[in-house]
Length: 192
Image 1 (cartoon, rainbow, N blue to C red):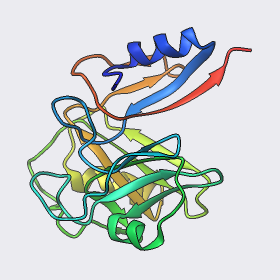
Image 2: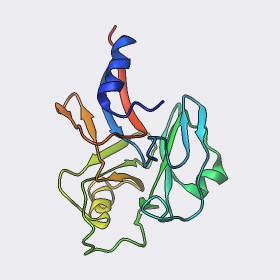
Image 3: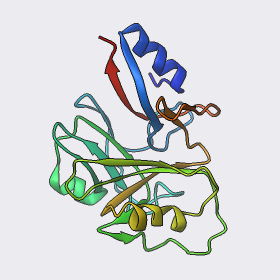
């Protein structure tokens, strides 16, 4: 059952003696808060890969999958993911790819007027670091993608969502409220 918000996640972690350090909504979801695309939680596949084009940002191919493995963090373009079958402990599919092989998504328009608060993730070339970004100002996809390509210089970055972009950060003292959210990526630690 989806948590729906950071408070519910935090409560469950508190009950287990754990602490929430960071969380972000991680992909598009249906009205019941279930993921639109592929989703793996603790090595258990909950949703299959969606490899076909479709409506909205999710279906704007290429889209991709953020994979957290035992020794790596990586973003795979969806067809590449299907070819390689990486072992992901956690995975979430979203779209479109913001940056793919160090290039911006080919359908992004530099002066597009479609501007929203947006969030996404990029992974380092050595697959050891993930960079989570939530824009605090309304940006189009082209401008948002350039943060990952030009500032963070990551080879691959994936769009999570717009309009419903939420962030929890204990360090930054930020806790976004509002719309219910589907998939969540989080960093937790034991209180002991």
